[in-house]
Amino acid sequence: MDVTLWEETVLPAVPRWCRTDVGRHVASALVEYIADRHFAFVAQIEQACLLLLRAREGKTTAMDDEQSEVSSPPVASPTTAAAVMAMPNESRANGGGNDAAEDAGCQMGASMALHFLMAQVMFVDGTNKARECVNILHESRLDNPSWTPSSVDKDHDGTYFRKEPGSPSYSFRVSGFVPASLIHVLGVVLELDLFKEWFPMCYFSEELAMKTKFHRTARFCVRLSWPFNNRECFCEGYGVDDISHRRVVIKSHSPADDVPLFNGKLPPPAIGSNVRALMKLGGFVLESVAEKRTRVTMYINVDPQIKNVPPILVNFVTKNIFWVLLWQMGKAAERAALPTGPYAERRLQRKDMYDYIQGRLHEAGV
Image (cartoon, rainbow, N blue to C red; front, side, top):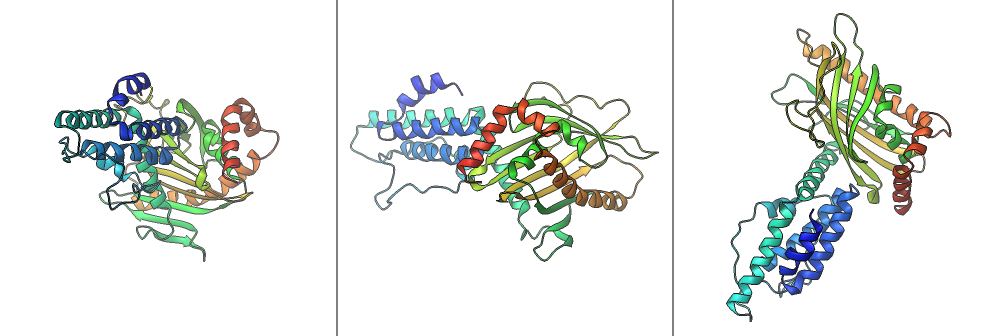
């Protein structure tokens, strides 16, 4: 965001009665966005937009006469931001005490500020990420009726599947507990080039680009038996720091080959004779439930691009591999807790990132 333009030109045109609060909420939203705390970002940007909407409509206070306060939207539900994007541009005077010219000027300033905020990359990117991760939280709910249980325990943890409309493949979900602290489970998920150490059949993995600590691209290669070529998956993933609620939410997918990524580059071609598999759906919800106990929910839908093989066979193999994932992740998290080894080395190499995560966990009492 062009902070100088906002502070020197746009914000001063906002009506005085809400200018300070709008500026405070936008400043807080910027901090939350930079820190990948997109649920908190949406909560702040919504409050700024609510005030600007009232000002654009000619209101002169933050509340109607019958209201005691502006309603605060749920932190994890970025609906107001989406509604703001769909609002018409027309303003309505409220017949207040100011003259018509001053009313029009105030309303125009509020409208300009709304348009400025909605045009910012952080507004579109932050609200989209929050919305996608809200969907992931919905997918992870044990009472989500769209999932069919395959093998579950009395607490409803285990493996689930779902037939996706218009697709021969299935989506799979697994949930359960890993005997490790959240920071060590995060270490397993964040160190993308170390996936080959634990991900079933993965023989090569590399991180390719990083936009923020929770937004990256990576390549994973999986070895298949003859007569099939090895498969390769290029993924873009991002997460939401929701550690204040003792969890981190991560979304992953395979972007289109012909669409530039956040670094302006196209996804790289597959290595050698590898065939590019497509991750249509992917996500993690990592939630701390005790000092050394983390609840993990993973879900995935991958098209392996295997022709002339019955989908039922591909789905059977995928389902069984997916169940092993949770166990393998738990073993990797135990290794990540050791004072030596590749994960310990990464904690030293990325000390700032891990110190930040540890600080956030401490703030949340995790």
